[in-house]
Image (tube, rainbow, N blue to C red; front, side, top):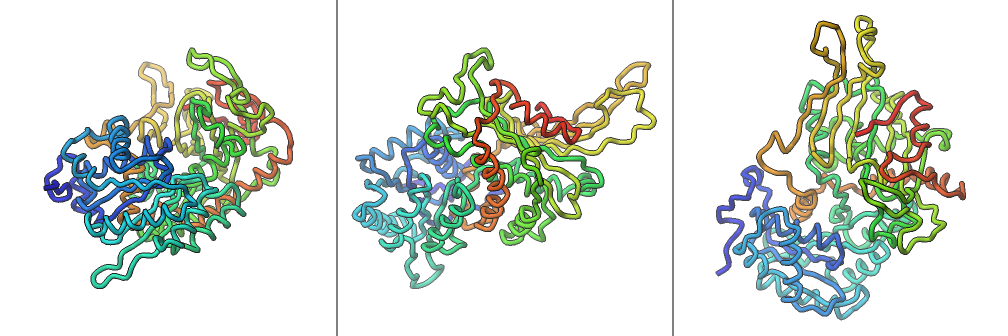
Length: 518
């Protein structure tokens, strides 16, 4: 008799999940691209962690679709190996046994008609035996050039359309799409046309895993639940905003994907512009998806590009050298790369937001690989106080307060302010007041994919950008990409372990500012 993980006491379950009724109903998740690194390291462990926390019902099923010559037992063994190696929560034999009973595998190519008929039979079997009740989500963890054929096959086979219910709630079908959502505005619109020709707009979930991170969601709480910040969150007090996503690793095994994409398309178009929107948006009237998305879209629509892109953008490529006591390979020397590639591994740009709140406040975005350390943060830097009393009693850079939201790692927030140095002299120095999730809360933050997969199964879309958001983001980035492409030159080299090329420092120096060194 299988154990009911949804009803039995589960010590891993957060009691708030029960209070908020955030437990998925009967359903299955069909995963395309099950052999990829994303599925193995993130998706499969996240699904198991949801089960382990009691947030998936005993009727939940997981279906893998791929070309490997596996049966259900083979796929189950692969899932278990992934879970044991990468799951966030401890492995629980009882939970695993109940979870494994719902694991199935369908072998086939993306364009194989017979494979989709087998998939349909499998889903019908799960409806009857497992009790999934016709509720199925299709997760496309596959290259974007395969979206069209998979969507068409799901439509042709009848899998995309939920059957009519005789009584009770109508069954649902949903599709989950991993980034990138196109490589420019035109391709994003074409991708949207393909997907929404098969699935209704409210059944399409575009995953940006950054939006599932606790610290990203905490931006809303920090701003709108505290009187301390919101009155100062405007051009009267804010000097500028820096949004940074730095990695201390190279491209690794992503040569096939990264060449021709680059840092700007890879993370600025999605992750960093989403962080910009959350930082700059007005307070929504509710957490309803329509209200939240509307405020983010207003910000993106109000973004104003610099007139001279050459003075307000920078890009670079990391060279070979030493980083952290280790000899590392330069970008152009990575295996599988064109030695004359003009793809950037570092990108920085300035944007302005043409609203009353943010007029005159520049937003500086930067992203890169092989930088000084791994960090993603939002730094809201305030204007200097007049310091008439303390102008002769502090450092040159004293007095520029900041609120820094650390997205990863060491999730939390820091406030920088001036304080008197102990002693007989009146000397003022900047100090920090720090909040860390790990120190303030006993429960650990769930992985972003746990939150997002659960929201897909629940049909809750606030954390998923709709196609209007995606298109607005491409409208912002496309002019920079077109400008860089027209240069027909290599991006500026920078040494590994540094904070990017000299042109990035010059970008801020022209405005009388400097980058933070996290």
